Amino acid sequence: MQPLTNRAKSVDRKPMTMWEKMYLPAIAKGMSITFGHMFKRKPTVNYPEKTRPFSPVFRGLHVLNRDEEGRERCTACGLCAVACPAEAITMEGAERLPGEENLYREEKYAAKYEINMLRCIFCGLCEEACPKDAIYLSETFAPANYTRKGFIYGKDSLLIPNPVTHPEEYAKAKGQHQ
Amino acid sequence: MAEEKKLFKVTIDNITVEVEPGTSILQAARQIGGDVAPPAMCYYTKLKGSGGKCRTCLVEVAAGSTADPRPMPKLVASCRTNVMDGMIVKNITSEKVIDARNGVVEMLLINHPLDCPICDQAGECSLQDLSYEHGKEGTRYEFQRRTFAKHDLGPYIQLHMTRCILCYRCVFTADQLTEKRVHGVLDRGDHAEIATYIQKALDNDFIGNIIDVCPVGALTDKTFRFKNRVWFLKPVDAHRNCNHEKCNGKVTLWYRGNEVFRVTARKDEWGEVKDWICNECRFEKKETSDWEIEGPTKISRHSVISQGHYVGVQRPQEVLYDVLDGRKPQLLMDIHSVSKVNQPDIDLSKIQGPSHSTDFNK
View 1: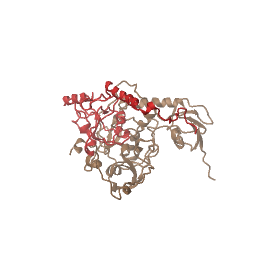
View 2: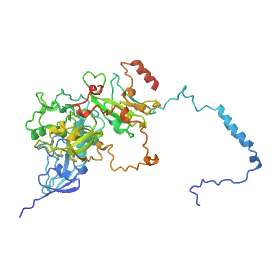
View 3: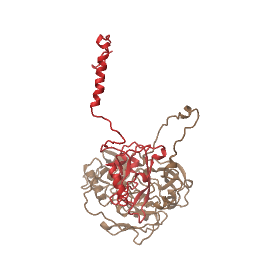
View 4: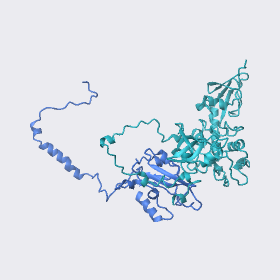
């Protein structure tokens, strides 16, 4: 049969020589490679105690952003939901009442906002679609859970702490992600 | 012997079409259809006297007629210019036209707040489509955009004057459809605004149609305000026997699940209303039992509203039942038991006007 490439090698089926039948040199060669690794830098880290730095483009758990005054940026425009290839995002919009100006940045806001982490594929298209800089994929993982119910993330778990009313929590959350 | 009507031969973008005398260039182009038809923001076929204001439909006339083949010196508004026999029109084949249209779109967007993420018209907005096609990414305007004092138009219609492009369509609609027009354009120039002068609710039987004719989000449905984005709703054609003699009750219902979120008139391929509908059909009848459903509305594949509408999908045969010897697969989670979105005890369609935090935190 005509070979497809010229890189094909025929298998060497010659009987082993005396030197090869002893196996010992081959074992010694293998062991030297194994023990040689003891003196090299370890590629692993002791995970829970030590963590690796995330890449700056890492796409992890979503956060809903606030502006400097602590108002929610999301206006429930639905662009993240329409961009989502996994259809993981759902929301319900509402009108801001007089007196709620310190809570929501614009006239309309997301009364409900949910991401189904079971569906999410962490592609980051929601972040790209957002016209209000409201959703970001942070540098953390979605934590494991015993039940499926724990993976429906609502606004209470997605929103970042308010930098005005809860400055310590905000600083803590920011420190974790950086 | 009946005299045969002479048809005018007109060439638009190298496509020749025969139309009746008295047809405007825009209507002739719409007979050809597709990209040849110039966009129109203020012209409305069903409204007498509309057109000639927004200048988006400008076309170049390369030859006036067979009798006088000189080109017209300036670009003309195709909605207001009638065809002549042997006229040669250039629309998208003319660089001058494209350039002028880009300029017009920039002018229309000068004072536009670009609050599409909030606006209920987003997804079915003519200005959004137009600026997507012709607009620039940035603005060259350095001044404050115009703002207006809030003006209440009653329980059904929400006015956002900052979004208005002053097309006058709503004024013509109120003039020609309703008995008494109570709103109009006040003041001049940059201060021109749609208002009722004395705070007055628009409550005529047919006034709801001004929502449909508005090419931008200046006039929107207050009963649908902020309830959902149009592209998450499912449009369905339906009709009912309306008691109003001028209304035939043919509408499009916009569903989420089993809830009717909004009722609009049916629109044709040019975004114009097919039949005017009355306020009762539009605002009061938000139950499926009020309507006879005809079937899903055909939505252009290029519209964002068609997202999530999977057409012609062939489902693979369900083999799980055979594999499990007839046992049903265990349901591991019912999403409605966890999700707080679309809760059964909150009927958004029953809430008059936009929902507030008070509706959700009961």
